Length: 199
Image (cartoon, rainbow, N blue to C red):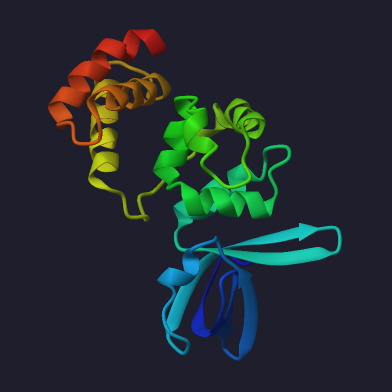
């Protein structure tokens, strides 16, 4: 199994890159929009990879971070979610946003993903709600301020005796009310009021 590729970018387009690793060119499919982040041809590049085998179809999928790779690998465990749709999920939602959308049962956030309809969103939530709490995102992705603030609020609620799942749901609910610019203190206090609702 190929965990990651680190080499020279040999070629690129909207959907694929070729990475030259010691003279061997690996074609890697990438999430939509990733081409905007790619370096120039001839420069070093590293992708975390998923080696996907299905009947006679063998492909490598590449991701900027381990967290993106985790989202992809858990998404394709959902019935009806293939690699192409899983790539759309990675492209549209950060790992933190994906996790929060599932825990909060936020269909609206999920159906913003191209080709993911309401029925599929419901299936994603039902299938992954328990699994997502068991997956640790290691923070290798860049998070916005609200994402970091939410993590701090969640940890505060857990410290007060809340479960991880209930704490995440409470913080998501509080964020909806207060908005993305809420202070950590205000967010935590309001989330604490919601904690019993989700326990």
